[in-house]
Amino acid sequence: MRIALAFFAALILGLAPPPFPARAAGSDRDTTVNENFYGVYIVEEQAWIVGYYGAILHTPDRGQTWQIQRSPTPSALFSVRFVNSENGWIAGSYGTILHTTDGGKRWRTQPAGTTEHLFGLAMIDASHGWIVGSRGTTLRTEDGGQSWASSIVPGDFTFSGVSFIDRARGWIAGEFGVIFHTFDGGKSWLKQKSPVEVSFASGESRNLFSLNINRADSGYAVGLDGVVLQNSAAKGWEIVRQGSVANKLTEQNHLFASTMNHNEVWAVGERGTLLQSNGDGKHWHQVKAEIPRVSLNGIAFGKNGFGLVVGNRGVVLRTEDGGVTWKRIKIVSQAPAKDLVRVP
Picture 1 (cartoon, rainbow, N blue to C red):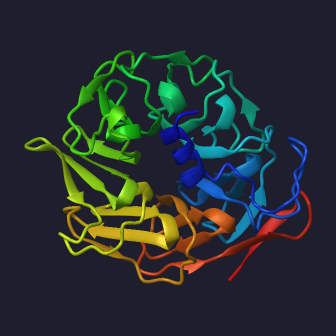
Picture 2: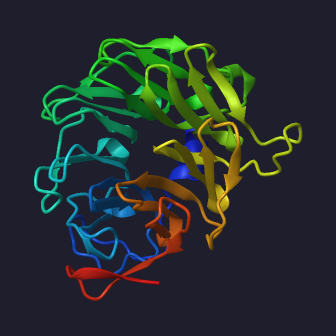
């Protein structure tokens, strides 16, 4: 495994286990307090969280109560996406793809045709989806995941971010700051000019970890050293934030995930970094909240102000006012296979 991929896995994804005993695949859990959580997704009042050792958590009521959903795998799960309240997918380590048609009451594995780690996942509808991962892995489906086809991308990059605006147009980003674009649903990919791209020979790490594209000429990418890229029709991709003395930003914490909520852009990262930008994406501030200094790995917003942030060591932050205030909730189980409750 080359240096950049090893760095990516160790830094953001925490493949080393947190301190709890191993359990058999598919077994019911008795605690989730110390889990590393990597991905979160919200649909209406419901939300799903995924993480280490096959962890899948579900709330039906905006985070008031939680249940452990039975997982068919012990693999780390990195990304979760739903197209409605019933139909969802999860991507994880060692080629893991899970699918549900009943809101997660039952998760089934889908054949990926690879054992590479699958970091990024995008679903545009119940049939069309894309997954990216280590060593250039780029998969697409047109039948809801019954089959996944590989695409050939020039180079041998690890990809972690993927975003599509329709069935044809999408972007992927990852190792060495590369960004690729497709006009044919991921069958072929063209490299775009990235202001942070470096060569393998340079020995530098300029990884991009997350992509959010809301239309063809507008979107964001975030990554190492707190960098934020913005895409526009006039200028293409440009740097709008990076931790340096020059722009008076003292924090250079890596950013692992991002999302948009109305006209706001949000990003999360290491050491409790929770950033928010209004409108232009050029002016960022750290949100004031009681946040542990651990890696925050995922963020999502739903309707009526509901939002969640998830991170290492069981960290879950919840907002009911669109991010004005965040409160940490501790999710603990009362008994195996029973509902979970949040404890302020």
